[in-house]
Image 1 (cartoon, protein in one colour):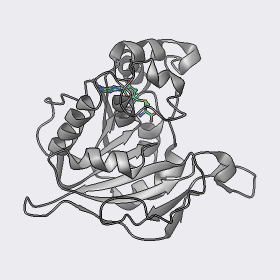
Image 2 (cartoon, rainbow, N blue to C red; image 1 turned 120 degrees about the vertical axis):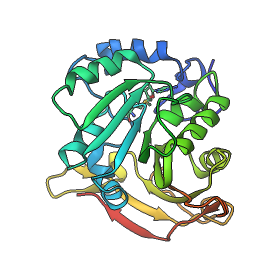
Image 3 (cartoon, protein in one colour; image 1 turned 45 degrees about the vertical axis):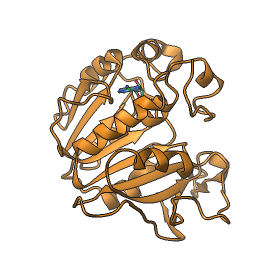
Image 4 (cartoon, helix red, strand yellow; image 1 turned 90 degrees about the vertical axis):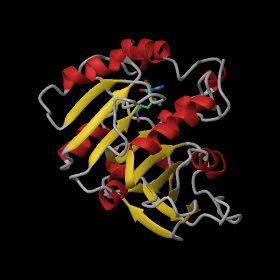
Length: 268
Ligand SMILES: C[S@@+](CC[C@H](N)C(=O)[O-])C[C@H]1O[C@@H](n2cnc3c(N)ncnc32)[C@H](O)[C@@H]1O
């Protein structure tokens, strides 16, 4: 049985029949060569890869930051960040299969650590342990799980707890502000949110002189109640959303949703 928010083409029609929050589903997927699990060396990146995300990561997250990658899967993101200078990235996933594969693959990279863990219970991590928590597709999986939306709320409470005041939760998702900001605001945490939108399909991306496509990133100002501007026009109907959420430093700050307008960043 699927969850409450199953409308992404990436998760596909299976979203109504598959429990994307279940360890058994992901263990089977990471054990099968046909679904990205090819053991040591196999990889698959959901939505966007490091070259497209680099401008926003380098702008918001210093390389000395203590980073946590939620639901890391066998994505190349953490490995590529370390190649680009990041010094400390803890990776976790509910699938023991993929965690064992990634431990073996990266045994010689001390900047990368791997732990089997459930995002709904990260009690191994102390409050405020991370400068930045990155989530590419894991909240989406939770929202397509049997436990949705309850599991997603528990996950976001844990994210808020382990992020230090002033730290960042960076969410890369197919979920539009209407759904995702409602969830974030339920996490008993004050987040200041900036939104970026990126085209997901190559035909809407910029072309390099060699013909390769690369994603541009547009910073979009949200309305006061956390919606897209009513006249906002998507360049790509299958766009991805990047929410850069800053945890408030003080308990007295109000929940606020902020964003700049019309700035465009491109990745090279
Ligand atoms: C859509 S995939 C994204 C993988 C990777 N982040 C990427 O960008 O390619 C979702 C990941 O979340 C993991 N996951 C699902 N439920 C989880 C949970 N409750 N706790 C931790 N990880 C979970 C899955 O095992 C899977 O690796």
